[in-house]
Image (cartoon, rainbow, N blue to C red; front, side, top):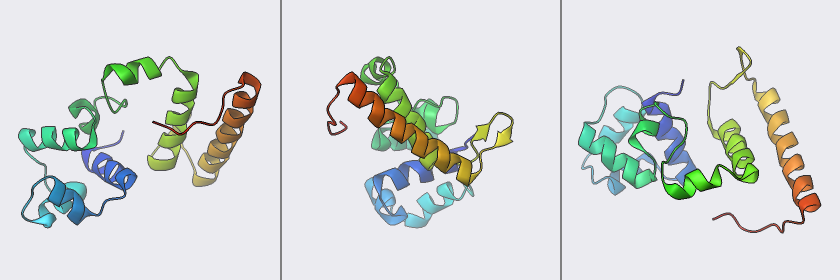
Amino acid sequence: MVDFSQRLKLLRDKKGWSKVETARRLGLKAPSTYGNWEYGLRQPDLEMVTKIAELFSVSVDYLLGENNIPSYDLETKEKQADILYRLEKICEDIEYESDLQLGKNTLSEPAGEYILDSLTFMIKQAKKWNQIDEAPKS
């Protein structure tokens, strides 16, 4: 299970922000405060957890590891019915999450890359068969 500090790092990496930039966006005076959260040395208070969730557009449940779906908004729920969205989320998980499992074993990096490459190929082929244009992701 992914813990709070891992989720912080994952979300920050997805945005391409440094720890200092993330701390600035959260209104923290000392960037080391954010760094301590990401390193798992300290935990923010509930008010700050809510602010972090808003900054990254995810639910508090996701941040706390209670849910693997980053957001509860209606748009996300509607997208879940779309197999393309779900496959892209799996690819994203493989690319950014650590400690994933395949069966009861930890997913190795080569196995993850193989699955990611295979899914990417399958998505492209399915789009061709389904006559879906490559549109930019929203």
